[in-house]
Length: 90
Image (tube, rainbow, N blue to C red; front, side, top):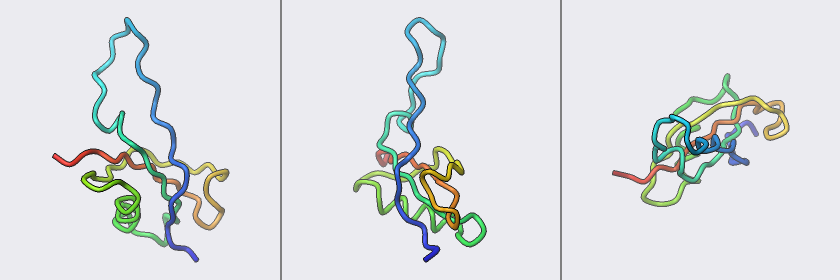
């Protein structure tokens, strides 16, 4: 009942506006993203990352991108939403 599960990921930040000085986009910024709902008190981060890895396509690695606690995406007992970027393996 308190196992982590997939949900809607948090959106990637928008690309920089033309003409502004910004660092180049990294593979994580343009990669597919997956979201995982989990409880920070009962779930190890390794378990959350393993669940995210299952949601990512083959030949990619789930890299942490963001964590938030907006309850419209995850229920009260699993309030944290981890967002992971599925970055191609090197």
